Image (cartoon, protein in one colour):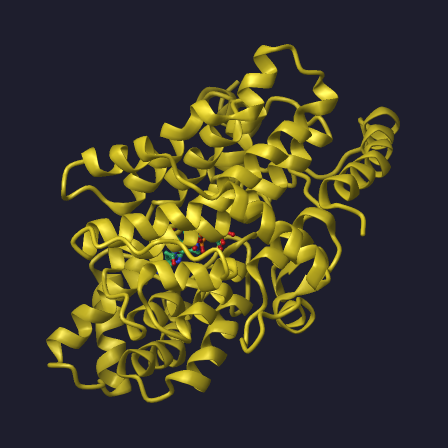
Length: 435
Ligand code: NMX
Ligand code: MLT
């Protein structure tokens, strides 16, 4: 069996000439125009990044290395007796483009086991933060605190060749990805379970061990696997992936980069939306004494939120123009495991009423639900009621895709990222408002 790192090296060497040829021979070929709306409007739709790890089709949703999520759930090897595949296998696929066999998954699992011990000083950093600190601050601080462990940082200081940047980044990635579930579970048990920490079990796969350390029974192991896999990647322009990519483009190492990724994910328009959905639903439930509302009443709650100048969390998307397949994967899980759950019924009713309302309001370009509309409800059902924690789960998943992207960024030598700004005067001159 070709070892993961050897395979990656071979694939990188095969790929490099393609990037070099495009750059050298077609560097001036025009890819697209940029409008004033895009310059002011958050660069929406500007084609200015390249990744082969995943692609987001506006209509059909995300594909990892060409595979849809339902295809992946079928093709990736599954943990014995489980419904969901190994998270380790998703990382292998994102990194190499190949569906791994069980032996190849075992190699990653073994690497993770060797690397997952979290140094005590990191746990001390988390514990030193004030009691009301958000779990995302804890996550980001823990990652940053470990920066001194960076292989990239040490080897760069020793004069590493730029052709080896990916290798050092790969080492950082495995070291960090192995530790993130441990750190996440520590944050949860420390903050919400009175510090009753559950030790890692080296015999379990990543998802199974995470559920074990969280102290939540089956089938939460499958929830964890599904959750980490579907959150792993969404091409490279989303705010968290882009923050990680941008930071790493300065040759800040992966510790700085994944901390940046975490910080970007913590905003309510991005990863924190899953917490906002739960908050919104709980508020509706409270006002109705826990009863399932009629559709008419639900419509009123939705309009009240819009009329007070707030967004409906869990709906809309910058790229997608259809229901997010990550929403559908989770909905299918709910229909199988918790069809009678009251909050799930609320979510399903939102699916029926919100798109028409957003369409009628006429502002959102995509009235359909995104992944965050479903994800919190599943966590709540399995007893994880501290919704402040939900985005930490997102960050553990997202780190897998961002790390894979960054290893390839360094392998292909993408330069420091530095777009150009204009002034408002210049834009007014361009459109002819000023001479
Ligand atoms: N509820 C109300 N208004 C919305 C919504 C929504 N769910 N989605 C978009 N709009 C508004 C948006 O605020 C903007 O208003 P204005 O012109 O007053 O600034 C207008 O519609 C046009 O926005 P779009 O171009 O459709 O969306 P954009 O690409 O700017 O933003 C999101 C995308 C995802 C930030 C936006 O749809 C949103 O705020 N959704 C709710 C929050 C959410 O669910 N975020 C999670 C996204 C997925 N993730 O995990 O990251
Ligand atoms: C994501 O998963 O990052 C979100 O859907 C946001 C995005 O793709 O812009």
